[in-house]
Image 1 (cartoon, rainbow, N blue to C red):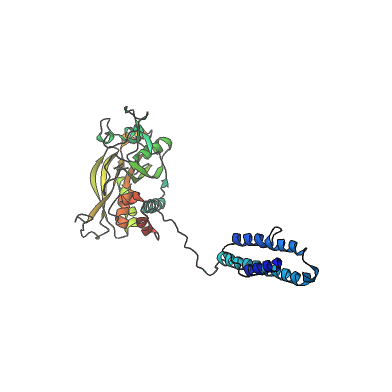
Image 2: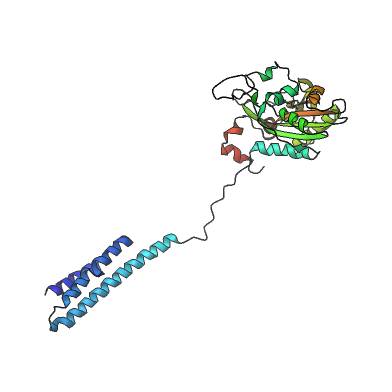
Amino acid sequence: MALRDNIQSLLAQVQDMKANSADELEALRIKYLSKKGEITALFNEFRNVAPEEKRELGQMLNQLRQQAESRVNELREQFEAKKAEAERLDLTRTPDPIALGTRHPLSLVREEIEDIFARIGFTVEQGPEVEDDKHVYGMLNFAPEHPARDMQDTFFIEKEIGVQKPTDVLLRSHTSSVQTRVMTTRKPPIRVLCPGRVYRNEAISARAHCFFHQVEGLYIDKNVSFADLREALLYFSKEMFGAETQIRLRPSYFPFTEPSAEMDISCNICGGKGCSFCKGTGWVEILGCGMVDPNVLEACGIDSKVYSGFAFGMGVERITNLKYRVKDLRLFSENDVRFLRQFESC
Ligand code: DAH
């Protein structure tokens, strides 16, 4: 009898049912158990079965349907268990370390310089990086033909793109420009520190870069003397490089100070004995300084008969080289994390 054979063959198929995915399983359920499925079709045939066979075939059919349903359920449970396993959170796993950023060595040093001078009353002032000739050179007593203005040194800004016309807009080549901004807008006493980026048209190498950082200091009041300048710089040097540090001032020339000096500190790498860093001299130059030239005070609207002042300017890269023994200036702007990570704990 055809129905009996069909039941048996479907029973064999159903017992052997396998599925590789939840979708495959659903396809099997539809194939056998849906309204148009093969098992449902056999139930339809059952209506035509002779009464004497109804009891036995009816039992077989019910059994087939139960087997099919339980096999589908069994497979479904297996898939669900696998999925739950994959999704389960392992609360004992150690967390991924959170990558912390590090502060740039130049920022660390700049902030340290700011802190040291803050303790003797200096406040921080900023000025623009794109400046005009007047504030960078003119008011600072640079003669009109001074070589610092030369194209080789200063980056000039073209007013029209691609058109090289004489222009007085430029990228500041030193932070002394902030002095003139402060002096023209504030009345003495003035005690400011002006950190910032400066630009010079130089080929990039281990020792020079087309941009670097300076900190400018300016103190204007009644009766400010060269001795005050020396004491302020000695205090700074000892705070920055250690109490044993010594300084020496060598006569020098800057258009905006008179007298002018360059300051060396005893080499903090060899302690003054002489090494390759200080070229065997025991001293390293760290800044330029001097008494603000009366011409500069007058150009900025300050009465030079009443007020005097001192100024100094130092390179942040240079101080950082000394403090952290970085030998190549380019490292500061390459942003190689292997370099930057070394300052994590600073
Ligand atoms: N502006 C100078 C430079 O860029 C540094 C400097 C020297 C600043 C003497 C000063 C100073 O304020 O008094 O080389």
